[in-house]
Length: 238
Length: 309
Image (cartoon, rainbow over all chains, first blue to last red; front, side, top):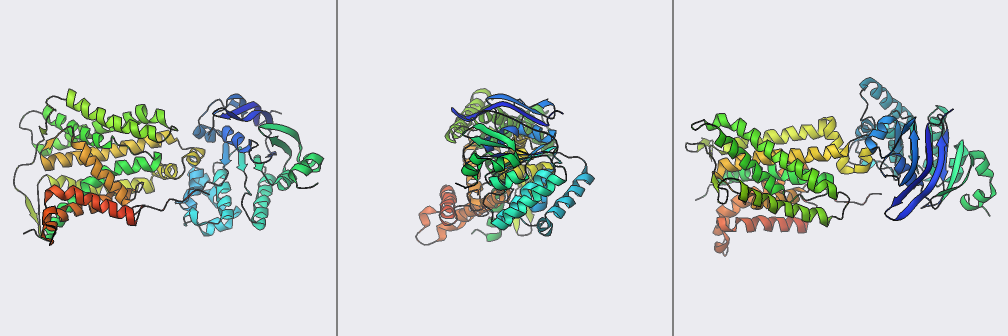
């Protein structure tokens, strides 16, 4: 079976500084794959390159059988790759409903969009209650829900989530992780970047550990969770 | 003696013209954080476009009948120059340090002025612009010049249309998203390049409409007219809160009213006799700008800029 997303020897640089130094991994349909690692490991850079916000220096990205070679970001969304960015990045002065509708910007099936809007409100009831409010008035956790809901509104083949638990209270973090588990059980394919390695590996089929621009260790979520070096470096055990 | 209602009317008319031009500064700034200092020249070129249309028409054509064609030509010339400036001067500099596009804008402003001076026939001095003949019309307590009626109709129509466009249409929504967070807008599937072009085009079209109002009011166009009009409109945009389209209009009206009031009343204030009259109106306009910037730096309708979390 071929992969939905295939990344081969991807390299990305900011000016002369190479942030991603040749990584390869793949995501198959229905899988949850996670990239874990410390700050500056190149995880966010990888996602931003996949969604077309950054241009790769080299390597190959194939999504759904199509090569992504400098394809502009707005075309990549159209192909079915949605990205919920780091720091949530909701549109603060637009309402919650408008934010969600922008997630479906390219869709022409009005009925389907309305249905998915209802689905988003079911998944996150708080968003439904506040749909007319400016998104900037939401708490951090609620904004994260909005960012995820917005990404889902494009009906993506692959959902990329960048640090969904960042800066959240433990309760809110748990809620977000539960939602990701729910999305997984519904068959959503997810590429998850997390600093909370414990949570990410517990629900991932595949995990990759990144360190300064390289993948240093790969395995199933289960394997990595029990790997001694991972436990030492990322799960705070000695 | 200057009567107050008349001065208010004069101020509002002048202000509506500043406001229409200010839309172009504010929309472009709202989306690409660029002060397009060539916008005054885009306004000026609209005036020459309208004049060209008038000159191409046979002698004796009624101005009222010529107006739609003049409007079309003005808008076409301004939009062409505005969109061309974006494509060939500013777009290559996107992502460059802020100073580079700013200097480009100033350079472009001078280049456009000089291009008209050098290549438009007899444009080294002001060229007469057609005006409506006949005296002013009395509307209640106000007396309005015939040429000003164009602006009195055009300005509100433009503002309502723009407001509806931005808040109700798909492209308008995309425009708001792009101005709030361009990278994330791309992730929604918005072609932000096209949104930026749209912002330049709308701003240029509004400036073209203002240029006709300007021509009809003053009866002339000249290659330098974009400088002071542009400066005033930029002031209006900052006054209202740059990036906010309603702010641009309100800033324009406040500025226009300030000038009208200063011309009419400052000289009656004891001790201020020397600072009244038309000669000092620009000074008073900028005094208001300085006061607003001191007391409310984000402008009248602007939002306090906060760092993104």
